[in-house]
Length: 378
Image (cartoon, rainbow, N blue to C red):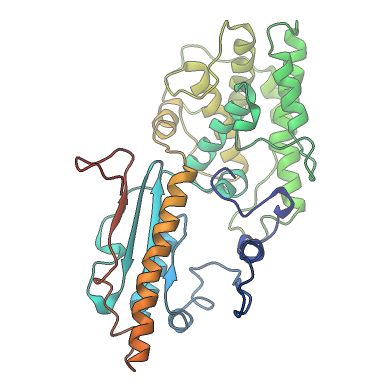
């Protein structure tokens, strides 16, 4: 993942919280006279009221949020309000970020006091393994486009190192297709069709079966089903209807046929865009077709027409590593302010939660892409 530094390929299939604790603890150098740092993982869903409730949150001096969805943020916000525990909340969208602190006794606005915008940045684990909305499969399809056409294949979040510890189910097939798409390959249409079928089979059958065999979805609401082999064969041979309206939703066989035709067109084109562009007809058709195939496998509804997929695909913002780092750093600075106050209150024999006033030292911080009129980035 290009926006974090905790997880590596050997951690695939392991709980993120457990791995994060182990790796982060190893990053802390030993300090003379101080005990070693201890991080404790609680593996579960933060919305689980049996495990994560008000008594649980009351055990802590403060809470930091590093969540990836609005539902979980609201849940933690309400828990902290009920427990009188200060919450340092942060979020990023591309080059923009914000950090703020909530604390009920301090009488400051909480997370839900302001209407939240629709989420536009999505975690890679959701995109690659546990999609639940059409936008998740469209993000995945955009990365597949990059995997096939970008000159630097490793730029795609779907890229898997062929020499990595865990063998990839689809990279060999993708690499073969990329080689056949080169201008000097001399590949025939029959060779391309065979390679296309192999890529579809590896992505929508072999990779899904691999995840199922790893029990990736044992706790999921819906378990994915591999692509039907008969539909794959029929789709590879099916003609593509011409003159269709952009609002028509393609069948699964039509989606496979559209993907096949997009690749065949790309093999004959003078140039093909390396990066997805919603206004490029070939790119948009490929993304619509491949995202619908993935939605079908994960029982995600509704399937998208070319028109609706274009609207979703053009409204997604990538996550930026530096923005995340800046906002994480600001969160820690806010924590210093809170903990210093709490230590002082404890020395005075006062309640360090109810007597705490975060208006002294804590701020609502915006991380900007461009400088303000005063020359500020924060």
